[in-house]
Image 1 (cartoon, one colour):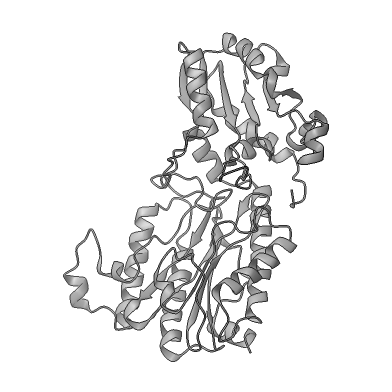
Image 2 (cartoon, helix red, strand yellow):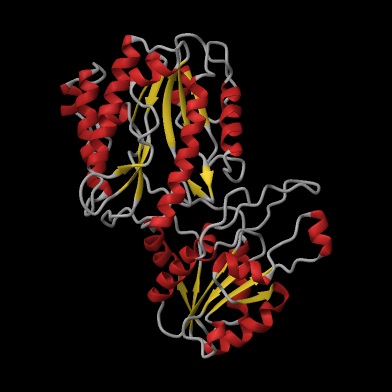
Length: 431
């Protein structure tokens, strides 16, 4: 891995939290992700399943974690099953974790090779009544490919049909949404790397540059600072001019012209933890008066919205309040009239014509991280704040985004507070 080692105490703590939520005489099983084929002998780069990483720190394929807090044998209360490394694997792929390294990574003392799993699991299943299984229950999930986890669940239920099966996700959704201090530090490092990328771009952008060249500059800076994977937490959006009005524009294949703005929605990933940033850059180094007017309106909405991220707040009520603030700004910009607002459909308020997406989402190990939106916000949660105004008829759109940690008292902490954001800061850096 490119990232530096993580203290195993984080994963020990995470397992204790999960175990404390399990019913008596239960075990829980978590699988790594597959390595997915492309064609011929090509595969996609491996990306670890965030749940097994959250609970163990193990970041390699063909790994399985079993938690059995009430096991009659103390050595079986936490078990890792790993792909056995050998000389052939070491030569062709690089050696995998050995048992000592697995302990140093996870804090788990009992480590078996994967080929022993069926035998060991049989013993464990005869001693337990309930089994927690892990499925993808994220509110944005749309999974068509059968996962390693799904295949395992089919096999387990077929072999052990008389057990009581339970869902791990309600526990994980709540635990993962509240970050430990160590996790906040890792997210902050991802944000710090993102800052380095943004500052690199300020001196690079000029009329005639291509969107993909900007993407390449980010990739270079992210990877040289130990960002993992391909450097990005998600597919980067580098959208110049009218492309910014396409919310998930990822082609990044257009030339940036004088007078245009570039919307850059990018974030580095560090130690599998995400960052999520959006900034606007004027190609010519200076905003037009209209661009500045709209930009400052979006910035005011972002700053007002961030102050509402407090314990006890509900996402739906928060979004409705942001909508009211955005409505006032849109009227001020001449994009809406009071008559538009008076006649609006309550199910699709007038402001949605220019700001059609949500303001905030949980962030952490996943860019759209775990969190139950119908439950109140709590201290330790990390949210993005990303309002936007999109004006196709004027040929540009503006979105601004930072990442915030909710505090027990007072305003949330902005993890991206050092990344230039005002019109004046951006123009000064682009001279």
